[in-house]
Image (tube, rainbow, N blue to C red):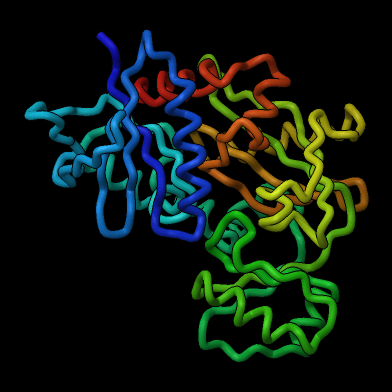
Length: 325
């Protein structure tokens, strides 16, 4: 009997369109001989299944079922492709735990932790993970420009602490621009993280659970045409994503081992994609994505292809791993 898979897409954040794209790619590539996929749009005001004829059918939030043509559909597993709130910050994972439905991404605690850049860095530092120098602000805090510059230097990056797809990020080169950059970040989140500039090669490392083993995928080098790997660079073709990265074998093995170690220490599952910058020849951790983009052009599918893993294999493996938990 085919397994009924709800592909959760959309979300409540600025990333919802990107998530819809990822979800549709999963829907297209799931093996129909094994799975019966359903497109589930999780929106702020309504949750619904989009049928083949584009008719919306509302999700019953009490048990995550849907009634289609007088038939109640119960799902065997949820494939989580939501970037941002509520699919990447732990809320959807906690809800699905409560209603007893397995899902493909990490657990709710790991999602909440990794979505919060400040807290994740604090957890990883005792393991000897190199990071940028950081300065943290909450909404309402005084922006002490002199203190910030003394700690992180210039240029620096001002980021929304809990946001993805480079929303709310500014590269600041002059002290007089810091306050405006903080205001921009606060439009996305009520917490701000300010990081020192790391000069070096930026790489992305996908780590997945595949055949019951933690597998680090081939490393991708990111070369942005813009000041940094911003929204345009990520989604509008303003970057080169080179897989495998043009780094030494030693560097490749080192950053893969660090990415796998982080995955293991945090007790992750599903797909993750961690960003690093090789600064002074050492990989410095930037952030981890736990529901990375899954379109054909996205980084993690590119890496899987280089590893000889097709999209149906990649997506099917995530479902089978989730069903074992």
